[in-house]
Length: 298
Image 1 (cartoon, helix red, strand yellow):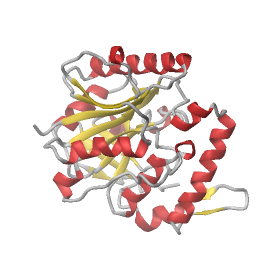
Image 2 (tube, helix red, strand yellow):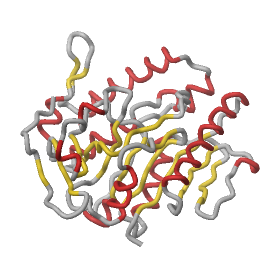
Image 3 (spheres, one colour):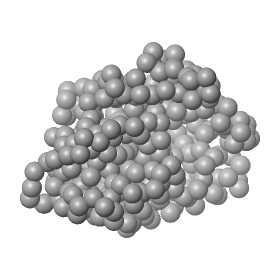
Image 4 (cartoon, one colour):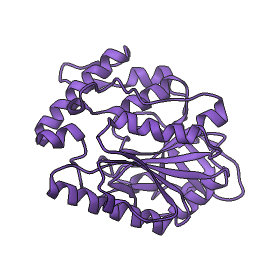
């Protein structure tokens, strides 16, 4: 088998207006995935779907739940599928985003299917344009013309709810899971992807941002099950995130807040990060190049 599959966490809320918005975002997602990856198998953890809302497609299968489950539990169902398969990679995503059809995304997926990233990388995040400009990383970089460029993770910005995870069980004999006790109350769920990534880094797995794939968001920010059901505002969502960040600090002693409230991530990264600051993997023939300019993490 030896290629990749896609896993999607999907949930449709009881509010009919929000339900229609999320269903439309998911429809756009599936159309884009089909355009870019017409043969990929998609496994969807479908929460609270009605019978007429499932997509009839031979390459889509469902894990159905009539009640909402936490984001961490849903992701773990998909990771369990990956770890107990012969697939090399899983594209793990929420149901309202994928990537832009820009740059050399087709080459990227071909290279991933051919296993060209397997020896150096354990998980990949797409570039997140919400926090930084894309062109400054690649326009003046001559190596980008002949190589795929991977950069150091910019914690906490590079966690846009879509990631490419290698089959850790197949390649390392290990498994990593989302913490299902992280959010005992659904309305307090936030930062589960960040917490998972921090533990991945602490365990020595190598994660990078890739500059050939750029996250595309379909604009449905209201993703938290608890947030929607209780009608919370964006401001209350931010407060939830602050509470969850405080919990992260209690879990990782290298993290702390400055007097202005910002979390300092540098000590954690310097202690545990095994990934290079920049990594170039050739598009065709050529050598892997690591840290050619000795760039800094911050």
